[in-house]
Amino acid sequence: MNDKDNLRRVSLIVKNALILTMDASHQVLDNGAIALQGANIVAVGETADILQIYQAEQVIDAQDCIVIPGLINAHTHIPMSYFKGLADDMDFNKWLFGFIVPLEQKLVDYDFTYAATLHGAAELIKNGITLANDMYFEGEAMAEAVTKAGLRCIIGDPVLGTALKDDSDIKKLGSAAIINKKNYKHNPLLDFSLAPHAISTNNKAILEMCAEVALQNNLLVHMHLSETAADINICRKLHKSRPVHFLKDIGLLGAKIIMAHGIRVNEEEMDILSEHDASIAICTESNLKLVNGFAPIKQYLNHNVRLCFGTDGVASNNNLDLLTELDFTAKVHKNINHDPTFLPAEQMLRMATIDAAKALYKDKELGSLEIGKRADLTILDCNSIEAQPLYNPYSQVIYALGGRAVRDVVINGELVLRDKKLTRLDEAELINTAKNYRTMILKELEQ
Image 1 (tube, one colour):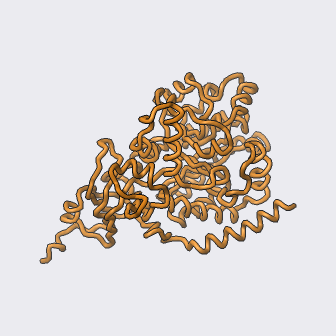
Image 2 (spheres, helix red, strand yellow):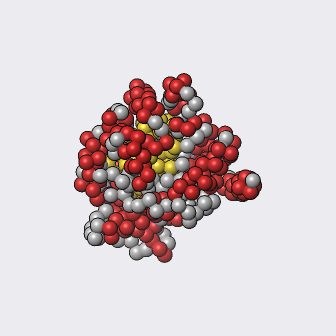
Image 3 (cartoon, one colour):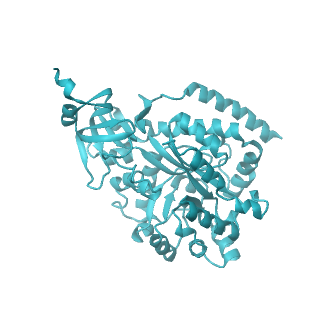
C-alpha cells in the first residue's frame, strides 16, 4: 500500500505560506499550510505536518505569499459601482441630492442592480474582500449577483421615510429582509439585515418599528450615524437629543447594530455605544473626499467601542481597496494624534478581519484562520519588487501591498480568484456591460 493511501483526503490545501491566522493567540506560521474540506478549515499548521496527514484534489503553492483571513468590508453600497467618478469634487449635499439620488430614482431596477452588483462583487473579490456588509435596493437582484460571483454578503433592506407612503408601509418594515432570509436560508453566502438609512431620513415611528422588527426577528441593523454636522442638527431639532441618545431611547441600540461613519460622536455617546456592544464602521477615504471629517478613532478605542472598516460606495470613494483604506487611515490618525505608535499594523489588520466579524456577529464562523471556521482566505503575492524585502508581515500587508497584491481568494472553500483571474465571472463581459450602462447614464444626465 502506498503511503499516500493512508493520507486523509481534503478538497484544497494551501501550502508553503506565511500565515497570519488572526486568532486569539496571534499565531504566525512562517512555512504554514491550511487544509480545507468543502466550506470548512480542517487543519492549520506547518506545511510538513499538514502534508504528512492530508492530500488534496487541489493544491495551491503559496511560496513567497502571505495568507490572511478574507478581508471584511463592513460598509458598502455595491450597486453604486456604475456611479464611480460620476460626481466628484463637489459638496456632500450636491453630490447626494443633486446627482446620486435623482439617478437612482430613474435607473435603479432589478436589471441595473444585478449588473452593477456583479461588477462591484468582482472588484471586491479582486481586492481580497470575502464578505461585504451592504445597504442598497433590490435585495433579490443583489442576492443573485453576489451568489453568481461567489462573494459572501450581508444584504441590507433599506428603509427611507420618503419611500414609505402610509402606516401600512411602516408595518411592512423588514418584510423583505425576513422573506429573503427564509428564501435563501440554504445559501451559505447570504445573510440579510434591516438598514434604516439614517436618523435624518426616517421619522421616529419608522425607527421605532425598525427596532421592534429587528429585535423580534434577530436581524442585524445597519445604518449611517452622525456622518455630517447636519445629522446632529436635525436630530437635535426633531428629537431634542443627540443621535446616540435618541437611538438608545427608541430601543435601536438594543438590537444587533453596526453603524457607518460615526464622525461626530461625543465621549458620552461613546460610553453608550460601548455599553450596548454597538460597532462603528470607519470610512476614512469617503469621509475625507466629501469633507465630512475624521472619525475620532482614538477616543472610540479609549471607550472600548468596537471598530471595523468600510470603503463605503465607489461613488464617494472611487475604489474598493480595503487594504489601501487601512494604510491611509493608520497614517492619518498617527498624525492627528501626534503618535507614530498609534494604530499599529497588526491592530489594523485585526479590525478588518476578526474585529469586523465580531461587529457583524459572524466571529464564530469568520475572521480568523482556525479549525472549524469557514474557508475564507486571501493570498497576497510578495514575489515582487514592491513587496521585498519582507521583515514584518503585518507591516507589509498594511503599508506596502494594497489590493494589487491579491493573487488568490477562497470563499466558502471555493477558489473565486486564481492567479488574479476571476473563476466565476468573465471580466471582459463585465467591462463591456459597464461601458453600455455608462452610455445609458450619460443620456439620463443630458435630459
